[in-house]
Image 1 (cartoon, one colour):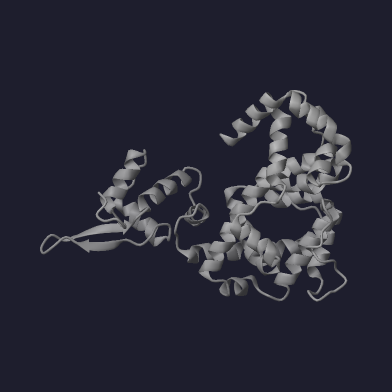
Image 2: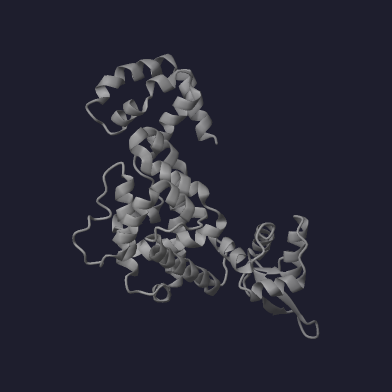
Length: 339
């Protein structure tokens, strides 16, 4: 039972998990909280001669269920801890810091090895990056990362063309990494990162991944051949597994100070790019209304969304189509809102 508004008894935690099909023992609870996966319990006196009751903070039962679900496909307790933390649960941040340090060391090692032209067995994100960027751009990325941070010959990583090119992405990534890691051991970076900053980096990473996952394919469609960078990022995103999320948070910690204040404010506020919702509405119409794809072409949509003078060339046909298919369009938009 729950013994107070902010506490859950050990018996309640076990019963709650059991009710959802997860067999949990008191010994397992002890093992998990000692490993940093669960909040530390406390002892509540029951009165003279009646002993004590073990209690956990409110929400522990739900965390135990999430832990059991994660353990169905991940047995390493440190990785289980990270996935719990990624989902927003409270775990021992010392365990998280160890994984972020390992991720940063791996980034540094990859940079040192990337300029090697000899064949390498790669997998995961590294393999996708090599397939999509190509050896020439990987080499350019590595070279940029190895230049001194004060090198003024490099372009500003945030002064990007739109849509970005793969060449610019490669150089910008190298520049950003160099500006952050040159001469600074990864352990020192994390030593100066507060717990609150780690949580902020996690929240920024989660929002960024969710936003990119929703927008990359539409942007690739919108820009056609010029949207190669979006297709690359979409493939990279699709290649991610839960084991990669530590690397994403580590990169957010690494590059956070180099992100412009306005961009960080947008991430923290959960603000999407200005045209994101308009693009979604256009795609909902294109996908659900017969004949819309012939009118809402990438070129027409680009002109309309960007307010270019060329929009006048497409607007009459679009307005005529909308007037003729108003009911179908309204039904498509209403179905999207109800998802």
